[in-house]
Length: 306
Image 1 (cartoon, rainbow, N blue to C red):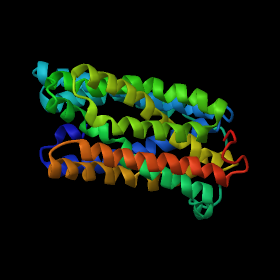
Image 2 (image 1 turned 180 degrees about the horizontal axis):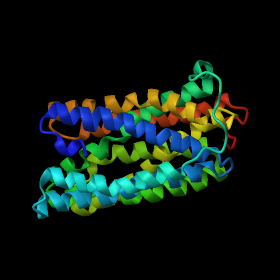
Image 3 (image 1 turned 90 degrees about the vertical axis):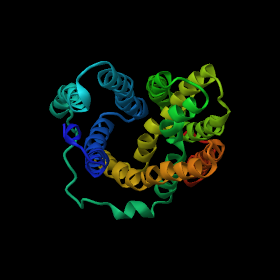
């Protein structure tokens, strides 16, 4: 609703950037922590189902907003307000139904000792590098598609296609993670995603771009749903899961601040996407390899089901 009132860039930055980022964290991590308290063996698939809701929103909302902005007389303000009214009942439902299973922890708000845990620290570093690289197609795929000759209208739907594939990419790997190990699937997902990003600049036709959107949406969903699941293995007390998620992802999220501006500088400097795909793919590959190496710090070892 506040976004609909914005007229200047600095206002959009405050509302959509800072305020939305803070609110997103206040919504996501308590909900993830509450769900994690109800599940142990099936925690990864439960979190995958939870986070798949953002993929469904990523399909519906961009298409609806595009239609209202381009094919109606509503204008920017009321188009955004309609989206606000659309989201409101879902937020109300969540506020009423999301409840923790266990009482709140009565000890310190922060758990600084967690950062001394080698496994936890390596997972944070892994997530950081994955986040630097994995968001590249989300930011640049429509621009890249238009540069390859795709119509702007069709290019605008690529993100919806990507989000549709990501819905399955967040649930199916969660099922596999509970069976074969959360860290195993998370590390494999990071490595496979890096390979997909390396191929970003090689997509040259409309068909290739659409197929790429589907493949990338699916494999990157493993990172999005798996990041929270692997952090939950670092604590045995379910009441600490939310704190561990917040402490871990708040540091790893700095990768999201670094990746897009760095890639934008590459595009501005070189005028293409080859350097972007190489840099982002390498960052995601480093993250996947670190996640794989993290298994050596656990009792099950490199070959174990972790």
